[in-house]
Amino acid sequence: MKKLAGQGGLTKKISTAIGNSNKAKFLKEVDSNLAHLLAEVNQNKVIAMEVASFSSCNDYPEQLLSLLSYVRYVGIPIKWTIYSDGSHTQKQIDLVESNFNFVVFKSMNFAELSSIEHLCKDEIKPYHTYILDYGKKFALGRRLFYYLHHKIEVPTLFIDSDILFYDKASLFNLILTENPKPDGWFMPDPVWGCLDSKYKEIHSEQFYQVNAGLMMLTKEFEVLKNGLDFFKTMNFEYEYFSDQTIFQIILKDNSFMPLTPKTFILDIGDQFDFSYLFKPKQMAVRHYTGPVRHKMWQNNYKWHLGL
Image 1: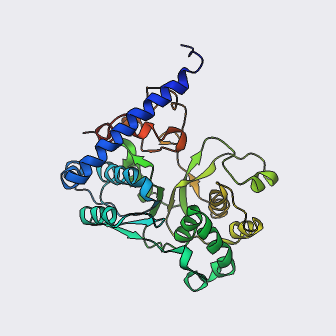
Image 2: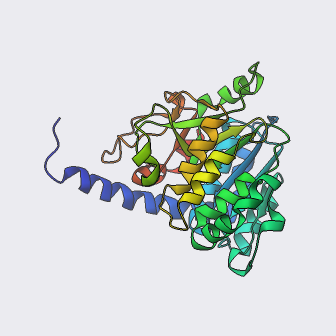
Image 3: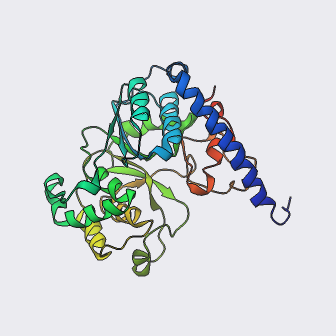
């Protein structure tokens, strides 16, 4: 049925209000009852994988729901490192680390650093001034530093805090046993263009553009130079998708494979609807990017966790 003029915007406004209410109820629940909620979703499965995510205090509810959905549908990882942009409160950190014994928060105060050269891998040292400047100005610059320096000892999943896991996340077991393994996998963006404008000026539209919100590595990056050389050409001027563009180049240079967009969902088609395009049993993962962030909360947390 064709929508009336303005109907979609009104629907989104109402859905967002419902979502804000559900988010507040979720936070109240975890503040008083997180241990019980974790026990409800824990399937006592252990998976030979590490996870690393990047988030802020503003993403705290999303990060908690992401953690719970992973435990529910994937299992208990070897370790989960939450790289904080530095804004998390000690109360938030303590609540998460005391309930999820596999989680550790890490953060550096970029504002106080005059150099990070001594903290960089040898192949990244020539770019240390650029990364420090980026990290001082934007949180995504800090994500770039953390992810490029995360030690890969077992298959490691890098995700944004607005990633949720669902019924078909058992696919990760197949991915881990695939032989021969590629160097890694990524979630493809179905729409071309979420990249730095300088990159788009010299590259035509490509299939399977990288979305940096979900990447899985089986080993350290072997080729970094082209991505970091492009980073230098930004000349200390950054756009929102600058770091995603760097990962686009690096992942392509390292022959990463796209995950199927049929179950690893990055789609904003239902942002103006009350209904959902995708149900939990259809998905392995959904990335609730900005335009559909309200869909993460429009239904309460029990819908996502199958409770």
